Every structure is written in structure tokens, then in C-alpha cells.
Length: 147
Ligand SMILES: [Zn+2]
Ligand SMILES: [Zn+2]
Image (cartoon, rainbow, N blue to C red; front, side, top):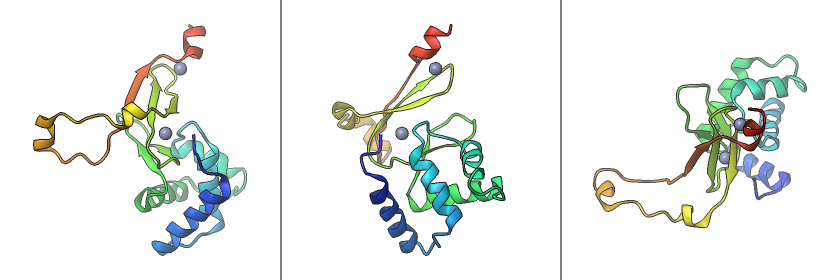
């Protein structure tokens, strides 16, 4: 869950856009607002469907390019995937994910000991680790019930 309120996030967004010389157009703002409203780590199609309600003329391509731009300037993160459509995460703070292998739902969770996981020494020799994120996979309760 995002631990900042909407105004703070928008302020941060404005700041980042300014920093990167990106105009805060109404479309871009709407896309960002959709992102921070959604807790399901949407892909570009999901965002497109939602933003279309406000801007019926917007194209999927615009949404896609905007999301790439947002990723570039660091206001959203891409959820690591396995070849399917990219999923976007508006929460750029440290957190971890649970992913349901049946319905593909991705749920955020926080855990202090996961935040502080120690990287094996042997691994540090070959790779410079910049980020640690835990991904738990399994079946969510809903899917267990609907089985
Ligand atoms: Zn599920
Ligand atoms: Zn997340």
C-alpha cells in the first residue's frame, strides 16, 4: 500500500516531471492518478481502459509511451514479469510481492526481515546488488475457494 496520500504523491510527481522536463499534461496526470488509485499492479491495457473513461480519445500507444516515460523518471516501477505484459507499480518504496499463480494477482506486503535480507558473499563477488525484492508465489484464498 502507498503510505503517502494523494496530494503528496501528486506533488512528488510534479517535482519529478519538472526535474526531467516532462510537461504535466492532463492526460499524463490522469494516467498517474489511475496508477496510484489501483492496488492491483495493472498493465498498460488496464490503465488504458480506466483512463479512457476520462479521456475517450486517448490511444493505447499514448498510455504505453507515458508509462515507459514514468518508469524512466522513476515515478513507477515495473513489476518483474515472465514474458507477459508489463505490470506497473506506483509504489516506489521498498516492499515485496505475493503473486497468485492462478489469477495472476499481485499483492503488496511489507516485511522488515525481508527488507534486510543478507546477500550471500559469493554472490556479491560477481554481481553488484542494488535492490532486493522478495516474490512469494502461490495460490490466493479466492482461487482456493473457487477451485
Ligand atoms: Zn488467485
Ligand atoms: Zn507492489
